[in-house]
Length: 230
Image 1 (tube, rainbow, N blue to C red):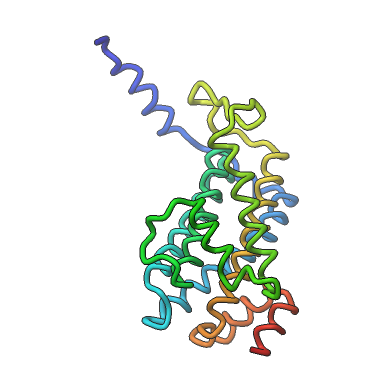
Image 2: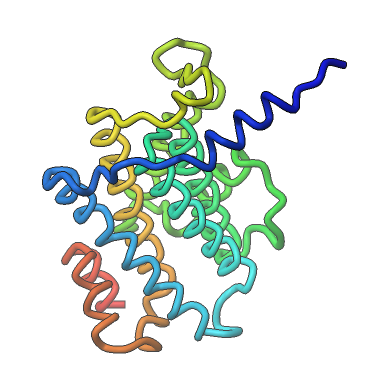
């Protein structure tokens, strides 16, 4: 086997020297990101409410919700660093974890071991998917997003490939990619908030009024009206 120490040193030097200008230094990009982060922050506030709920909620569902938040954090870091394909793969994982939250909280599964296609079948049979459910379209939308994001993992079409070779080209800002990715992330984060509110609205009172207001401001009036009438 040939000596590759010199190549490893090159990789080490490359990683050590990594730096890039944040795309958020551009006002347009910052405005786009602010519009997305509003909904991500609301989800982080939900984490506080669910952690205080104790046995009133499924501990397994809360664990998967934490992983959803971890996926969204990774998505943001990767996307802001110009790594769009892996960012989309993490965003896809967030959808899987949202499906697990629903399936676990609704009592359809007792662990996180189900395959995604099974989870989709299960959640489509839940009350959230009923004809009169105010979040039916949100559930359908995240399933559609999951299918669309799968092409970045499974498709061989060149338009879905990253092709960042060699390693020094891996991080590269692209305005169109930035806008498309954060548009999809905003869509998902909005719908996650609606689904979480429908399932856990009774737990909202556990957090500070200011945090409650932030969450409620991120929700549509129709959904809030439906829940208040229950």
